[in-house]
Each structure stands twice: as structure tokens, then as C-alpha cells.
Image (tube, rainbow, N blue to C red; front, top):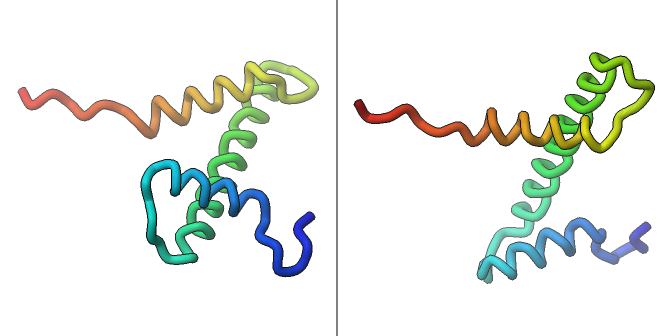
Length: 85
């Protein structure tokens, strides 16, 4: 756990990612917005994985459930636009 005044590890990771992408300046709230999106995505993936696990009659989530949930998100979120014709 971060000590008072010390930045949380996840915030440091976000800042490191931004720097690695060449982002030099950003408002401090960008880090918090990124973390909120990140946490929401993880909760969504784990919720879907739990649904898949329950549907398969398994007692708990396993790696395959998580992989399926991620693949489902990727397929849904990053679908190709229809052809121009």
C-alpha cells in the first residue's frame, strides 16, 4: 500500500506508458481517467469470464474463461467497418 503522499503503483505505470508513447505533457486527471477506464475494463472482463465459467458448469474462473472474455471484448470493440460498396 502506498504511503501518504506517495503515488500508487498503478498511477506510476500509467505515467510510464504515457512517457513510452512520447506523451510529454498531460493534465493530472488524464492518469485518473486512464485508471478508471482500466479498472472498468478489468471488471467487465472478469464478469464476463465468470458468466462463461458458470455457463460451462465450472466451480471457478480459469484462464480459458478470461481468454474467451478478452477475445469477446476485442471482437466486439474492434470490429471492422463495412465495405464502401
